[in-house]
Length: 205
Image (cartoon, rainbow, N blue to C red; front, side, top):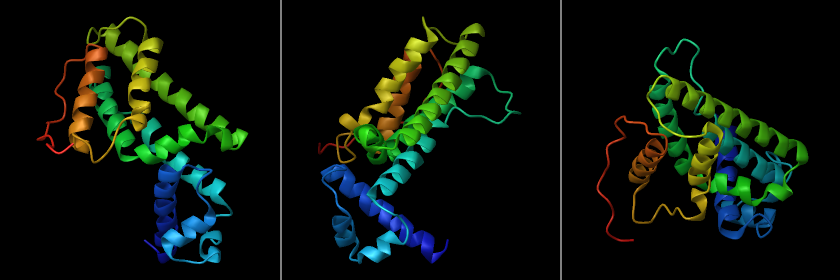
């Protein structure tokens, strides 16, 4: 990894934290520079403005979360097994990127129309892949649910809006939340496979 990539990542991490705590409108480039202890030219060398920073964060999180139902063309496992893996990856990615995912929802009106269109395309592809695996798994007799589109969107609401209630310092550590939320999704579609092993819960939240 080059020094340039390290510096760019530092900017993204600092900005992500500030955006999450103060909101997009409440965060300025001066605040980002102050958090990093650098001058404006340092940040402007990598990003033209805070809109580019927030779009970079939102896109990175969206790609990480919304490509989890993609599998190699030569993956011949039954649909329900791929779905089980994809759902676990989806929940894990959303937990890992929950701050940037929150930004993608909260600052939608501030994003460029063409960028919003790219996010919609990514989301639509995700739901199409999810519904296709669900339908295939149901045909194979491994899943039980009524309507693939409605159920997939309901699952999306359960996972996609976790940023409104999830706190890393809360009662459940991240890996435990991933296990429990994944198990909940499995139940929504009648999927019976082993879920990730649970770990001890925290007592201090």
